[in-house]
Structure formats: structure tokens, C-alpha cells
Image 1 (cartoon, each protein chain N blue to C red):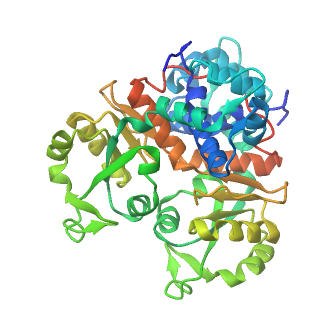
Image 2: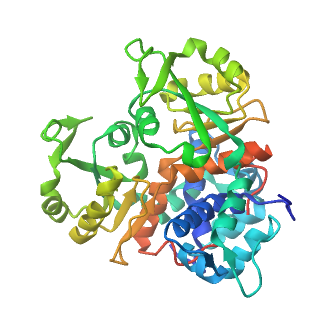
Length: 218
Length: 218
């Protein structure tokens, strides 16, 4: 996929939203959509949409708009959905368990291979068909299976240490749910943190102002 | 807090990050910081920072930078942290339980008053000191306690119905963890959805490209 310019983080952050929106449109049977209609459904302007997609080579046709299935497929490709990424989950507490049971990894192009914990009560069991191994075997597993991503759902006190072990074992990315900003010495390892508080504070702002978050977007 | 211009969603989304970063700086004992140093620590340019904060009346002083505690307090005020917002959690499965137990509501200016479920095994119990009531009593509780926000951690199949009930009962906002895009007939009710998949797909993109997400930001 040819990229015309260096892509900003803001655009990268919008791509999954495009993908989600286009998946919904496709499920609803929509075949093609204009940039203004796509924009309206996402709270973006038509020119914003055209500009974003132009970063990746531009897909629309003047006066026709976008073919929903094709655009979804192309954005999926940009996002790496077809690359067969693999993932392991560290921590099988409530949060880890909720994610293992309910998150649709495969819909996002990921295969969940295994989970790791130190609790003897769960090591050796399965959660939703996924085996739970002891964390002692983490490095061997990652290198044997060329695991791409480690998901951290461990207590805050263990976050940095396990982040270091994941990076040392050769993962490409860490998906961090610990609410602790881990630092990563290896610059080639991407850390993506999920901050629930950022979401709640944005909501707090909006109910304080009673602004509609979808009114506009830059 | 005077606002100079209509604030874009992108700026609103950055405010919680400023707040988080400034809280960390304050804890680390930093008294004042230049816009370029603040920017560098957050992967933003100094001019971006000045522009963002200018939306809210501009706080910095030429040649001095920002006082960390003051700026944090002012951004906290903009975010509505001091307004004593109240919240209830719907659903005490793994995800609800993880959030109830671990999320620091008070650090974000929220008081968690109660949780609701329909499971007889948990109704009448407490989770981390928070009472679990039957969902039948939801509307009465919300109106009696003027609850600001309802957090949805229920199964997808119950998401829309309970979203409707929250809105009907008079909450100002819905914090939606169900991974289902609920629609809200009342335009004065703000829906903030947490999409884990948006985060994973951004990570997927970054490991596919091996780009550092913090390199630049628009």
C-alpha cells in the first residue's frame, strides 16, 4: 500500500474507526458511500476523510464515492489485519479473564495463543479454550511461537518487570492495560497503553460542558 | 474558565493526557516546565501545546513556561474533576468487577455509588465495599441520588436496553464498555464508548510499520 506522506498519529488513530464504521456499513448492506455521508456518520468532514485516505494513496472516485467493501479491505490491509498476528495474555485476574472471554481477537486479525499467570490455582487450566501456563515459561513460549504482542493485565506492581521480559523475549508490541506507564528500553518495541481514565475524563468534560463529542473533530 | 474558541474533539481528547502527564510531573517534584519540554514528554510539539492550552485562555508565561501544579489544577477544573460527579456500574461480570476493584474513580473526580446486576448470587453483596443492587431498582436509585454517569459493563445483548434505561432515568453520560455502539435518542446524554479494538488495531498498524507512535502527533 503506497503512502503519499508521513502519516500522523491522529490519522493512525482514526483508521480503526474507519474500519469499524465500514464494517458496520457492510453488515448493513451498504455498497458505496460518499465521503460526506461517511464523514457525517463519523462526525468528520468530507474533506477530512478525503485527506486522511489520501495519505494511503487515495481510494475514492470523484462523483462516485467509496466502495464500502473495497475501502474496508484496503484499510484492513493497512492496519495489518491480514498478517496473522499472534498474542499472549499476561494475567488472568478479572480484567484478563474478561478480555480473554469476550474480546474478538480474530475479528482484529489476532490469534490468542496462550495466557500466563503465576497463580497455581489457574496454571494448567483453560479459559475459554485458551491454555494458562506458568509465567516461568514466558520467554520460551514467545521465542518458540514468534509471538507478536504481549497483553499486560497484571497488577501494577508487576507491570514494568513483565513489560521488560516481554520486550527482552522479542515481542514487537505490548498492549498495556495496567494503568502504569511502562518504559521500554528497546525502541523497536511498540507500547500501546489503554487508559480508561482518559476516556472517563473526556466524558467528565463533556457532561460538564454538555457538548456532543461527535459535533466536530480536528 | 474562559474559552477563546470552540474546542475541537482532538483537543478535548488531549486534555486528559495533559492532566495525566502533569500529575506525574508533580509527583516527580517538577515545579515548572517549558512548553517544549512538556511537548517532548508527550510526543507533541511546543506550538501544539501552546495552541491547545490557548483554547482555554492560555496559562503559560513567555520565557517562564508553565507552573506544573497550577496548570494541572486548571486543566482538572476544565475537565470537571472538582464537580463531585457520581457514577453507578451496570454489570458485575469479570469486566465490571475488574473496573470496580481497580479503577481509581476518586482520582478522576468520580464517586462510585453502587453497582447493579440481575444475578441473584451477587445482588445484596458488596464488591470492594460497593453495594450490588438488583437492576429493577436502577431508575429509582438514579433519580434519588442524581447519578451523573452510568457505566455499562453488561453483555452486548443487554447494552441498548440498559443504555435506554439509563438515559430515561436522567443520567448525563453513559460510559460504554460493551463494545456495542448504543444509540441514544436523548441528544443531551453523552455516550463515551471504550473500544479496545481501536487500540489493538492502532498497535497492529504500528507493529506492521514499526513506527513509534510517539514520534509525532497532529
